[in-house]
Length: 63
Image (cartoon, rainbow, N blue to C red; front, side, top):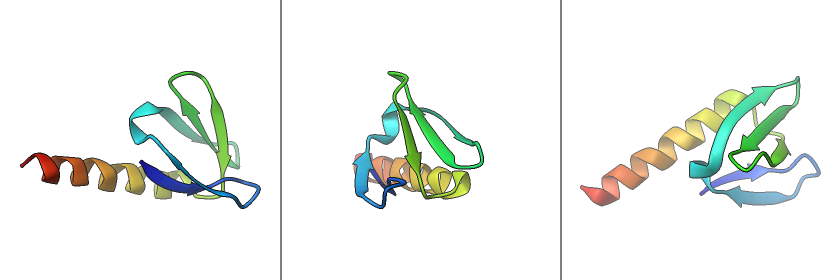
């Protein structure tokens, strides 16, 4: 899970494994594999960093 800030200011955690893509429209929109779209305050680069850190933490737990 990664923590993000919904555009209305509410904090939420989303399953990073369900992210299909992230785009800047200019607002940042996360589209999940079920086609649900989430508008967030974080930039595309911030979301990418969060997903990378999440995946690294998963690999560290396996090893």
